[in-house]
Image 1 (cartoon, chains in turn yellow, brown):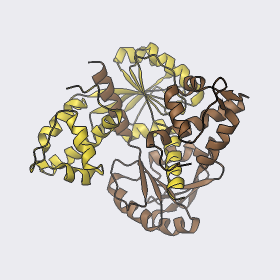
Image 2 (tube, chains in turn brown, red; image 1 turned 120 degrees about the vertical axis):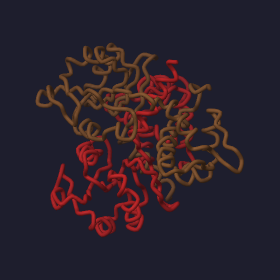
Image 3 (cartoon, rainbow over the protein chains, first blue to last red; image 1 turned 30 degrees about the horizontal axis):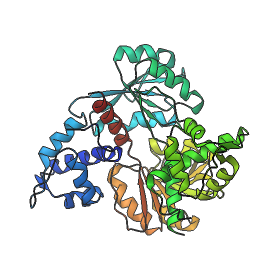
Image 4 (cartoon, rainbow over the protein chains, first blue to last red; image 1 turned 30 degrees about the vertical axis):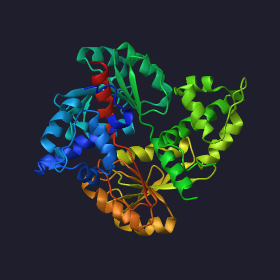
Length: 210
Length: 210
């Protein structure tokens, strides 16, 4: 399966399919058509069929997809069959929200360690996660062999902290800062810019209503 | 200008261009080539040229784009020449982080009102924003003529609150809940699913490193 060549838009929809397949399996549904799945996940059936076809998962006419087979497949594809530990860098308001958000409630991913510069926050366990001083970051990341970091530091600190993350061997960064950080090619950055999301929504509203 | 027909991927990049053009203008840069802009915003030059061409903005060979002209144009396109008020529904951890995030620091958008079910939070002003009981939501949204809402309620409440938002005349919802909410066609939903973002990053790391 050429799973590394699928379009980014498809990759972004996989966790949605996975979550809903989980719910369907729990509800005892054993097969589902792309049209039925489309109604649940609010993605059009043609897109669903195309997405699933990248993985060689082809529904049978008149039957659709087997829910458990598809679920098992997504579990492996999304590495949900093993725990992934991630580090949180920056325990400000957004960082605290992410600590409380508990990624591991719905999937096999968890923030296992956090770092901050503020001495009032460090040396303690918060929402079940130990918070270390930022100066211990490189050492702890290497020690704990963590490869993924969530970046929620102030914009002024973003590039310097990123450089440290790269030195510590981090392979992926979920970047919540508005800075477009510079990293070597081997490191993947996924940007989540909340201001962008809001501006994009406003943009579409203005221009579709004109 | 056919600004309502541009691809969503392009629309999502517009706020990035806008933010960096602002910085360039402040720094006194008066023109920039797509290659130079590409280095700053970490988007490849061909994509930048294509994005800008949708708006009829064509750089001049050997000169590039005029920064102030482009900035002025984006300001209008992104409705940054007037203030947009948005409502925050749900002042939990993520909601509190968004209140503190202050969209209006970098642009002309602000959370002007918030709603929650928790009586310990309502009837007060938090981070400069008044927090009303959820039962006042429909009335206040109509009164304040707010058309955009940020949804950060628990998943169990998401659809019911959405139905109320639709009744109150909301036109756009920035949905932070993991539920794919149902809305009439006239309402635009932009989903920001933090678990998805993290899973997509993990997915790419796994499959590019295999």
